[in-house]
Amino acid sequence: MNPELERIFMKVQKPGRYTGGELNSVVKDPAKVDFRFAFCFPDLYEVGMSHLGMKILYSLYNREENMWCERVFAPDTDMEALMRKEQIPLFGLESRDPIRDFDMVGFTLQYEMSYTAILNMLDLAGIPLHTADRKSLAPMIVAGGPCACNPEPLADFIDLFVLGEGEEINLELAHLFLQAKKEGWSREAYLQQASQIEGVYVPSLYEVTYKADGTIERVAPLDGAPAVTHKRIIQDLDKVFFPENFVVPFLETVHDRAVIELFRGCIRGCRFCQAGFIYRPFREKNSETLNKNGYDLCASTGYDEVSLSSLSTSDYSQLEGLLEEMLPWTEQDKVNLSLPSLRIDNFSPSLMEKISKVRKSGLTFAPEAGTQRMRDVINKNVTEDEVLATCRTAFEGGYTSVKLYFMMGLPTETKEDIEGVVDLAQKVVDLFYSLPDKPKGKGVNVTVSLACFVPKPFTPFEFEPQDTEEMLREKQRHMVGYNRSKKIRINYHESKTSFLEAVLARGDRRLCAVLEDAWKNGCKLDGWTEHFNYDAWVAAFEKNGIDGTFYANRTRPYDEVMPWDHLDYGVSKQFLIRENQKAHADTPTPNCREHCSGCGANRLIGRSCF
View 1: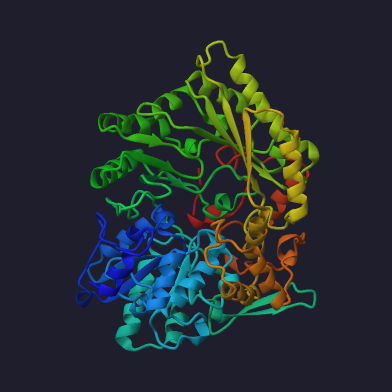
View 2: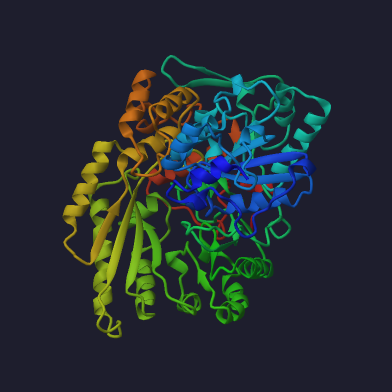
């Protein structure tokens, strides 16, 4: 026990973020393990402890007798100040040992606004920021997750990136590291060997050259690195490792419940949705496997809620059967079933009845756009009649509150499309009051949540410009002014944050200097409104002579070399171009169950997806 840490814990707002010792956490004897891994989530404990990927990999490593994985989260400002004052380096929760002494330090890249937290955590740990300044084999700095599909803005800081799904590749990297330690390899030798593992991208083994106009001329591999790095996928989800227990946090977290994963991928092909493309091909778990996963987790953790997680939960082909299997024990144990990603076009009365067995929670649906033309542009494949029919089902089932998610600033968007969002919400309100058997004595509440469109890599909209901040603000003002109903509440995202997300999402490695200077200017928890400092980012761009609008607000021609073109996530660029052209023709594409559109992802499993 570190007495300095014990003393500091008494001075911070939420010591439970840093103490460790939770139910199901794993403590090993460091003298009896050969490989130590620090799993770092670059955000606060409450956010990181909600993340399913961390739970899976934590248990995956720790079931290996000679390996020990510990959790590390970004400290809040009060804890960080005390750590810097007392010169206490960033530590793992389980052992409280400095992570600079571990073999491997891994970061998960869930959202772009966490990038400065990564630099801050490396600095707090006493690890050199730049990969070029690290001379010894350990610690090796790795990163993975959805944002790894464009790793270039972090290329100067991360030794290697894991592309795709991590259950197999992480252990392969660990075993290679053990071999490197045993045989006395240099850092360079390990990275060169790691680059030969499918799904591993080593930025230092690639040279990027630029044209006079600032676009990329070419990305050239060095020292035998592959010209294209292909993502890794798990072929059979029923056989892949899934933990029987989760660490149960001391504090209430963002998603404080058990989670089971129904499937990976998505059949829908919404043209703005990065996850829907980078997680292809579509692969389901069997309902028996899922029922066991859910039962085991609730039994080992005591959670009274289990979330059925996926990109589009009601697209799970065995959903009704799974709920029938789960209801006997969830009803008996008073466990609530949460289905967070429901489709409007396949939400049935029987499904609503099943998820309401234990207790009712609010229903959330995502029309994404207010007019049919706009929904065709983005390939949402949902009609207004389906939206209203779904809300009718909910209201007749006793619900009086509905949240509707939309996007603003989508390609080809017009004033009529903006007004269509409010018009659709008003039709939902009118529908409620038109029902003869609506709940007596209750009014309806419709919440409209608007996200600013961010063009992302590996989507048909990767070529599209983001609306400028002025354009987005004007649209937000117009929508609020157009709304005349007190029954409709409109929430919208901060456009400055969305601009930076677009810059980092589509950026190249010249942004590394901007990122470092933004961190030096005090940026470190950019995902939190109270910590976000846009002026510090502006100063960092100006210092480095880089215009963020070059990355965010510029249309990109189809033949431009993208910063991520040397990475392969299974979906071909030709397919993305075809989908982009169909978007500009207001033409939808059938979902994958109805018709294969030839995206290319099925070659990763060597068969048709369906």
